[in-house]
Length: 356
Image (cartoon, rainbow, N blue to C red; front, side):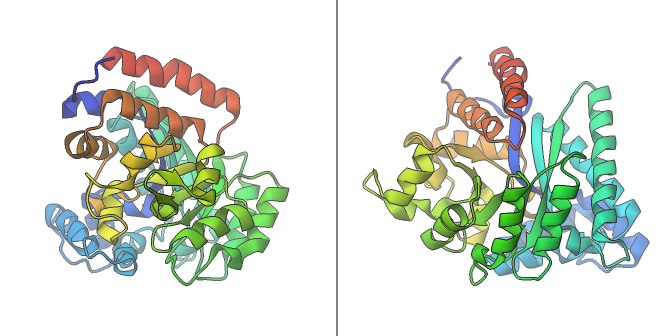
């Protein structure tokens, strides 16, 4: 495999895996416009191009709370069965067009119940849309497998309810669980009952930690709550001085706990200062199991291809680096071991060999 830098079209054709990508942060601008008109919701603009630019501009505030507030308009069009079916199907097709072969989509069902759907009906509908998208992608010769992570909103009181749904739907496409929302001031240990229930039922989970809050958030997610992965985790670098790992950083690296890193998103929320200096590169070089992710494709104006391209152009990443983080992601996917191995052996590695 060549170690020279790679052009964008080659990057697009590389097989990719994304573990951290929010359904309500990845809608097509034109779809938001059409669905908003259908439900009578007022947008900042009805021009799809201008709306896409508005999202990125609003999210570039450097403030996680304001970043999260941009979801008002996407959620407004995801309160009906029609809206959920369409956005879920398009979600899968957009991943397939970007070269993604495995993805995990996350969303909080409680945020889609304003139109009268129950949380259970929301999950059923989204799974139906995802299945339709996977069938269309396979028929088009670009198969992608998508598993679902159900989220509880850490600042509200329905986290256990969402965890119950993750257990109920684990044989129907739901592969795991997460808590999302404003991190600072809402520690994961507030929801120990939900995490204990998931462990009892053998449902894996990740936790947003180490983004807006530091090492205590990561420590609590892992050692108190029992998370198998960490969403973002950029602040683990606070426990690394001159390349020497502290006890928590050593625990994360040595036990191969995946860090779901989202470079562009981290710049928007102020969790990182630049792509060139984003912790993902240093952590990769130190042997952490880092993975590369989009977080919210509409809100960040990004794709997996773009995230890869930025790291190649601004942080000197090579094809080997991209292959490593892709394999890392599949290794840490919430899938059975044999299925992960088959995906790496039969899809990811041959795909890299064929393109490069």
